Image 1 (cartoon, rainbow, N blue to C red):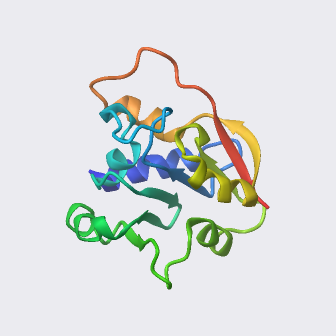
Image 2: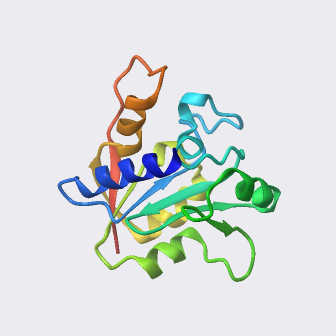
Amino acid sequence: MSLQKLTALRTLMASQPTALAAYIVPTADAHNSEYIAPVDARREWLSGFTGSAGTAVVTATAALVWTDGRYYTQFEKETDPVIWTLMKQSLPDTPTMEKWLTSNLTEGATVGVDPFVMSRETWSPLQVILSTDYIYSPVAERRTFCMTFVPAGRYRKHFRFTLL
């Protein structure tokens, strides 16, 4: 199922007026709650990884999740290693998400993210490497077709960023 969701997300990323080179999917809600509601579990829905901490980055050719040492074993049990790559946060050889993005995307590449569901700690380093524009959320759109419960309100616009 994860491959189908990932393929659908990549199709949506490519179909944007300015194609998204990467999309960031954090584990958070708009209130930065410690425990998020199932409707806000975007990264879990996409990857199958149920740990309470982690951020996914999806490109046309890569699907990665950064998480800490509490979840390495859980990640390996819950995800398909052919599809998903574990980025072991805090290990010296593991690049940060920002470093990975700047090393693997070209200058001017478009990165999609919803900064309203990111903690300041996660958002601040990204703000340094990205400039701002607006789009909608492809993850939110794709999830709408697969969910039994959909929030009554419309999804708000999300930001699109260009790598500096």
